[in-house]
Amino acid sequence: MLRCLNLITSLLLLGQTVASPRYDEKKERYSSSTVGLLKLLELEIQFIENIKTYTELLSAKANTLQEFIDSVDRGKEKSVAEREKYVSNPLNAFGLMRRTHQDFPKWHNYINTTVGKEQIQSLDDLLTKAPDSQDMKEALAGMKRIETIYGLQSYDLAKGRLQDKQYNIQLSIRDCLALGQHKYQEGDFFRASMWYRMAIKHEPEPYAESFNEILGDPLKNLKRNYARATIIYGLSAGNQSQNTQQILDITEEAIHKSSPAELEALVAEFLNQTDEDIAREMSVSEPWPTPYEIGCRGGFPKRTNLVCRYNSTTTPFLRLAPLKMEEVNHDPYIVMYHEVLSDREIDEMKRRSSKMSNGWADQKEANSTKIRDIVCRHSWWSEQSTIRERINRRITDMTGFDFAPTEDLQVANYGLGTHFKPHYDYTSDGYETPDALTLGDRLGSIIFYASDVPQGGATVFPRNRVSILPRKGSSVFWFNLYDDGRPDIRSQHSVCPVIVGDRWTLTKWLHIVPQMFVMPCKPRKKSQGYKENI
Image (cartoon, rainbow, N blue to C red; front, side, top):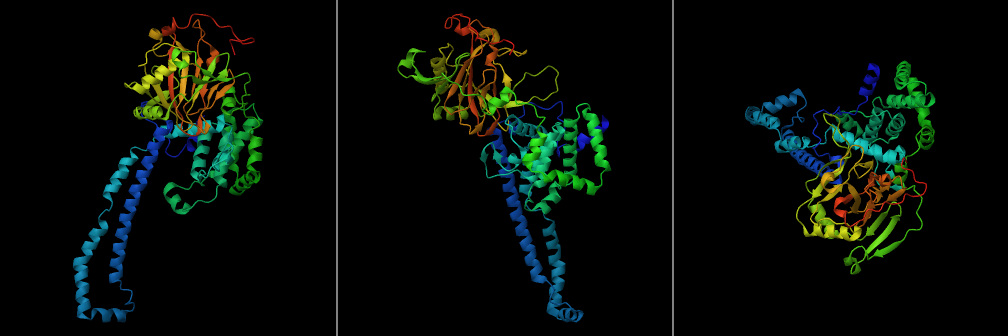
């Protein structure tokens, strides 16, 4: 076991350490939201601007020193005779004496004077705001979700191809290496091998030689690590009787006994195959995608017998201003409303959401030191606002439910590969929903989409095989309970990671107690063939 731990430790990400048990979960993580990533981009811009100014100051100092060199350069008097002739002239001799006595100490002081002190201090301050190791872990985990949930290939991601769209960008050698190291650390040797492969095949980058002196050579031991990950995966897939520790020992012994030439030949043999062929061979033992993953990939069949219509009956107000309604699912009831959130309301929502905090998928366990995964950054819109009250009244028009127009709304913004795993909005799995004692469980949920998401970010109901793509200004509403208050497990839903785009949502949970006289208790009939233990 000790040998295994040493092997894995040697491949940890540069600078990445195990998070301290005292890690502050309240600390904002840049990767958890687009809002945070914008702050990180601004941090990088400030860092570069300070380096630009510092470089200009250094350049000005170098130019001044070069001018001094040019003014006194004795390159013209090369021979001893020429130098004797030079110093034998009293004018030259005096000038030499004065310069070496008066000027040299001043030039020495000038050289020792540090330029750009203000910029150096600013860089020191900016470094304190840089992402920590936990934020880096979250970013790596987010990239893993995008890759695995959508079934994307490393050779496409490395070259800037996301699903069926090509972007004018590609990952660097160090990006590929970091992803490969993370996959190895996670025990995903198939994807670790593919990312190492992408790093090896990467074209030489500009300024690589000078950058490597500062950042380290990413190619050092890369082929060895590629061979190691590929062999481990091959042995794991071909021999299920051996445990991971045995496979690690066998692989390490084989790598250790191989000469550099043998290792080079082995890697060359691996690289001789096309990326597509080797990925196809290695993915044979990959598990079949879950219903959640199928929904994220848009693999659910299209529904029939669903209609779009104007809803003018839920409240009297809708007779004057009916809402555009689209049926998504009949049983359980899921419906979308379109053009129910304006740009002005969205801007107001974002303006009042400056102080966002980490949102979690799980409750914090007592005395637990485990750092939970962040779903998103969110805040509660609780400030008094006529727009918030207007949106709450609109929810009543859409659902017919009764609640105060001054109630809070939750605003959420998702980040790099963040997602919400399949879950229930009602009390479940030991999780008690807020206000359950006074307002009862969550009878229904409504989500407003405050942004378009070009790729990914769908709301998926895996048990119903329903997938809903975000559409700015629209909302989706569903029931979590039967009319008699029993949980409906078909309401299980999830949020897919955003691939490209900025996912903003506005959420309201509607509790059962205030609806006591609005919705009479009429148990629903279960769908034919439906099983409670799906």
